[in-house]
Every structure is written in structure tokens, then in C-alpha cells.
Amino acid sequence: CFGEIGFLGERQSFTTVVATTDVAVVSLNARTIVQATLQCQVQFQRVFIRTLLERLVATTEDLVQQG
Image 1: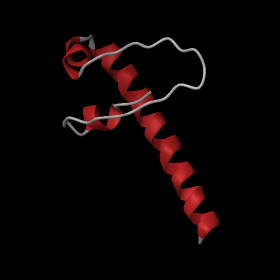
Image 2 (image 1 turned 45 degrees about the vertical axis):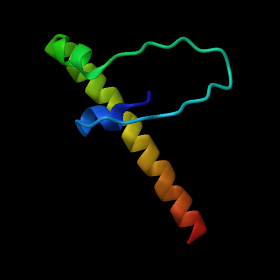
Image 3 (image 1 turned 180 degrees about the vertical axis):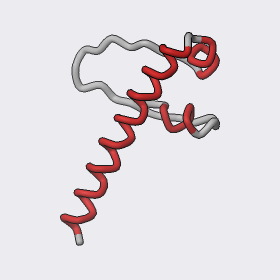
């Protein structure tokens, strides 16, 4: 999951992603998500929040190890 910060922050963002294995990609823009059903929007937001939480935890652990 990437691009969630731009979506949740309601601003344009640019992300570079490099895959190290074969992947399948689904590209959605904010308009597509906003037009989805409420249940679908909630599922996207849950994934976005989980992704952000995982990144926050990893960053915090890195900072603790450096400190």
C-alpha cells in the first residue's frame, strides 16, 4: 500500500516504489475511492491506517536503536 498519505492528507503526493519481486498493481485515485460505497471506503481507510501504524512503529524502533 502506498500513496495513502496523499489521500488521507487530501494533497497531491509523489511516491517512487521499486518491486523486488513480481507484483500485481491496482492503481486508484482519490475520486475512485470517494465514489465507492461507504463500506469499501472504510476498508481502504483501515488498510491505510494499518500501513501508517506499521511505518510509525518501525520508525520508532529505528530511532530507539539509534538513540
